[in-house]
Length: 386
Image 1: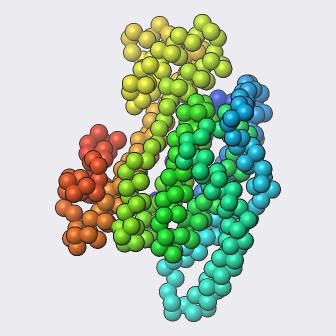
Image 2: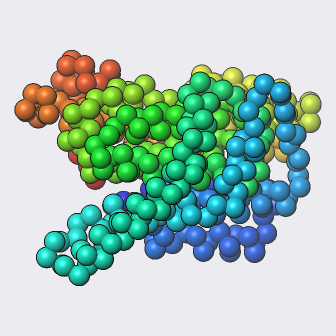
Image 3: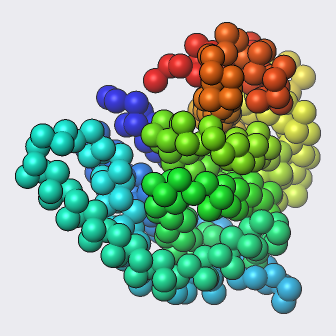
């Protein structure tokens, strides 16, 4: 299994956690397994299809119907999604640009026939991009402006599978424009798209305060980090000459507000008399999210509450697997910060950094990133691993 497939497997694991909260049939699980295979390459398209199936399954369970809270001064994701509900070309463009830029980038010039076919294919892609960008760019810019202003959206709408699918199409279109802009060595559009969508993913986790909200937020960030990793690997020299991407990324937010999620989900699913346990656990997780609910409940003072149905439900909300996923995300962000700093340091000084502290001292990093698995500071070796 290669590195990219491993990342997809990790993101697949994030999504499957939600399934334990619904009565999913064996038939559905068989449908899901079709998507989990080494041969799929394009996570953006897979996320749309998989999340659509996921939300269908949740809806079929009919355990809880979560109300949509609508306020007049809040923009509606449902309304924003409408133009892309029937649009299939964006996902295809996202996939084909990936093949063109990342998969076929090492084709040798000596392979004339293949190279000519790729050039012709690239011309077709550029034409399709121009058509879609001309049609939807103004709406995407308005959407991203709302993200940047941290404008809260109507709650609950992201849990509609059609709204979610269309939102991911908007994200795919933004990522395609990032790829086009990078090819032109234009990094302001890349930074603008990335910062807007990272802001949305961060705010979504808080605004929704639901298990599905936090999972969708994590999947969106995984897509964004994947794209940034590839852009940085392919264009490291060019990014180093334009520090705005690095400076923005130093401040990126990637929250996992599990304490709020725990309280929200408990209020919907537990009896009033059982909420005190959820609130107690939420307080503990607010102080230290690097412990599972099961671990907290195993403490002697909590054992009187550990054998209840409410405890069994709460254990599913924050597990060791979730913590591993959170740590992995934080490590990927830390490694990418170091890689950007290393490249820019070398571009400016004409020499390689000898350690991460040197990058901090010269203000290419604001602090030494932590390895969340070991608890130790990261070193240059961490950033050099493939």
